[in-house]
Amino acid sequence: MTAVEYQGPGLPPLQPMDRSARIDRLRAALGRWGENGGVEAIVVHKPANIRWLTGFTGSNGLLLVTDEAVVAVTDGRYQDQIAAELAEAGVEATVEITITEIGRVLADHLGSRRRLGVESHHVTWRQHDDLAEWLPNAELVPLDKPLEGLRRDKDDGERSRLARAAAIADAALARVLPRLGSRPTERQMARALENAMFDLGADALSFDTIVAAGPNSALPHARPTDRVIEPEDLVVIDFGAAIDGYGSDMTRTFVAGGEPTPEQQRLWDAVREAQAAGVAAVADGAAERSIDAACRSVLVGHGLGDAFTHSTGHAIGLEIHEDPILSARAVGILRAGYVVTVEPGVYVPGVGGVRIEDSVIVGNGGCQPITHSPKQLAPLPA
Image (cartoon, rainbow, N blue to C red; front, side):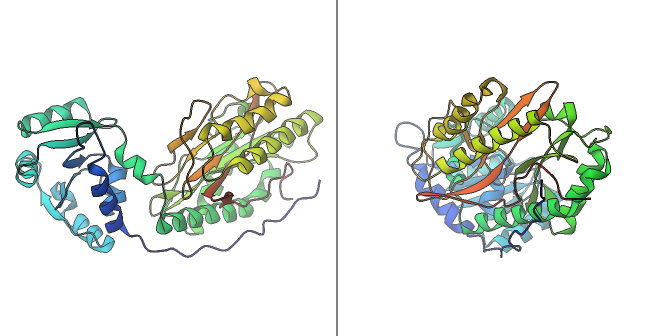
């Protein structure tokens, strides 16, 4: 089998973020959220949502957004950081530095507003009780993933970061793949790939890198071990780089060296066909579950339906697993601007596993892949 050298694109330019437009979208949505006429304000606890709105990356804080104000609350560790990050993001907000007067701050800025939206999927019981104690005159309205709904549609700044992160991952894989035939351990291969991503400009990893060889490749979320990768092994490599918090996600499967066995080739060909069918099904207006169905029907046709044990994909952004989840249970519709993965896989104990994954931007009439590494069973030569 002839190896194909990576010929992907260079690093895409980064487009500016427009966080003021995001805050405007949030304010416009307040009246639609909850029952009985919406909410008058929202308190945001989830760090990824705070970062999406303001650019603040600290580990402690909350955000109050009303029709008139944005109030960011954090502790003294982040006094300088929050001022700098909000200024860089172009966000006008009142910053309050306190750990003992949070209730007073919220009450002062909430004013006469009574219906306060709360992230019910994220707020802890203790946080809810604190809000109820601090704001006895407010009605706490549970909202299920309100910001996550807005975050589905990625703007130009977000898509450019996702595309650059994907390009870094492509280039990193091309750099380290020739090592695969020299019998490294799974852990050594994973560390080499991670180092290459940082060398090429990543500022973080999207998630813990998966390098799973031989019998370990039959474990969908295996962790790298000190097992030596043998030439006859199937090797699943699932990894991603991150830029400004936005991560990429790509999986490729190889035979470490030499020619694949007929069974390895059969599994790989089936997954490659399924993955192509899933990517072809992605488009604005497509039912989310139809992507899963497209992949799954191919594998069922190959007698491998029971070996496909997870959902077909998910959205990516500031979190590596975002809504929508592309599964048989999905009930939504894909829209242009979403960025999702398509990653069918099969896992056969005693033989190994195969997974192939790309990240794509949903568009009108189709999608645009942002991961471009060749899909080939044989790796580049050592």
